[in-house]
Length: 358
Ligand SMILES: NC(=O)c1ccc[n+]([C@@H]2O[C@H](COP(=O)([O-])OP(=O)(O)OC[C@H]3O[C@@H](n4cnc5c(N)ncnc54)[C@H](O)[C@@H]3O)[C@@H](O)[C@H]2O)c1
Ligand SMILES: O=C(O)C(=O)C[C@@H](O)[C@H](O)[C@H](O)COP(=O)(O)O
Ligand SMILES: [Zn+2]
Image 1 (cartoon, rainbow, N blue to C red):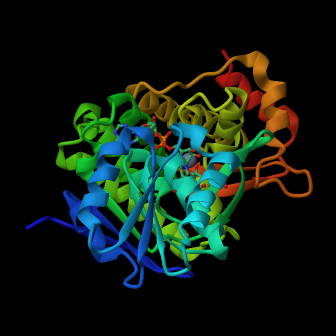
Image 2: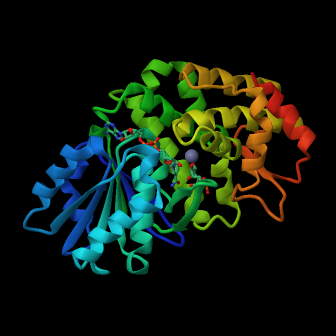
Image 3: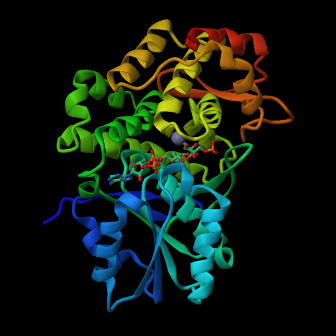
C-alpha cells in the first residue's frame, strides 16, 4: 500500500495536500464529481505524463490538453488567452476542472486560468518540481507577469486538491531540484530550524530524491506553507513572511528578463534579507553566514553585481508589499522569528546590498 501523508490546508479555503508516490494514478478520486471535462495545462517536458492522464481518465471525463510554453514563458497574458480559447471552444462549464501539471510557472498559470474562467472553476494542482511541491502549488496564489514586474496580475484562488507525487521528479534535472531547495531554506529560516539542521547534516542526502530525508524536507516545508496560508489566505498580514527574500529576488528575476530560475534569484534575495535583518534588527551575524553557507552548499548564487542597485531599487518599488510608496521587507529577528520591516531608509538598504554586491 502506498505511504501517503495528508497535510490539510484550512481557513478561508480547505483542501488536502497529499504527498506520496504513484499518486497521479488516482487523480480521478480528487476531481470534482460533476466534472465532465478536464483541461490539463502542462509544460512541454510533461507531455508524456499529460497524455498518460488522458488515457487514464478516458471514460470518466473528457480530457483536453493545453501544452504551454516552458518556464516563465507560461506566465503571460497571451498564454492565458490561449487556454481561455480552448475552454471557450469546448464549452467548458463551471462544473468542469483545470489540472495544473508542471513546475511553479505552469501551476501559477493554471491557477490563474481557473480563477478567471467563468469567474472561477476548480483547479487540481499536480506540481512536478520541488519548488512547485513545497510552495507554488500550495496556497492559491496564482498569477502572471507583466512587462513591469513579476506576478503583478493574479488572484487568490485555492486549489481543490494538491497531489505531490514524488515519482514525478524522476526526470527533473538536479539543478532544478537544487533551485527548489531555495524555498525549502526559506521555510527553515522563517519557521522550522530542523530544516536547516537536516540540510547542514548532509546536503547530498537531503537533496537525493530517493532518500527519506528528502521527503521529510518536502513535507516539513509544505507544513510551514500550509500553516501560514491556513491563517491568512489573502495575505492580510502573516502570509507576508513567505515573501522572505522575494523583494530583491523578484527584482533580480525582472532584471534578468525572467531567464533565471526563481530559486536562484531568491537565494540572493535571502542573503540580502539576512544582511538587512542583521543591520536593522537582531539577527546574529552567524545566521547571515549560515544563510550563505547553506545556499552555497546547494550551489545557489549568493551575490549580484553592485552596479545594478539603482535598477533593482526602482523595480522593488512595484513590490506588492509596498504601502504608500514605502518599501517593506520581511526580516528575521532570529531564526523562526520573522517580521515586517517598515520604512527602511535607502542608505540602510544600500548598506545591506553592498554585502551582496560583487
Ligand atoms: N504561487 C506561489 O505561491 C509561488 C510560490 C513559489 C514560486 N512561484 C512561482 O513558481 C515559478 C518557479 O517554479 P519552478 O521553479 O518550478 O520553475 P518552472 O515551472 O519554470 O520549472 C522549471 C523547469 O523544469 C521543467 N520541469 C518541470 N517539471 C519537470 C519534470 N518533472 N521533469 C523535467 N522537467 C520538468 C519545466 O518545464 C521548466 O523548464 C516562478 O514563476 C515563481 O514565481 C509561485
Ligand atoms: O505564497 C506566498 O505568499 C509567497 O509569497 C510564496 C513565494 O515563494 C512565491 O514566490 C510567490 O509567488 C510570491 O508572491 P508575490 O505576491 O510576491 O508575487
Ligand atoms: Zn517564491
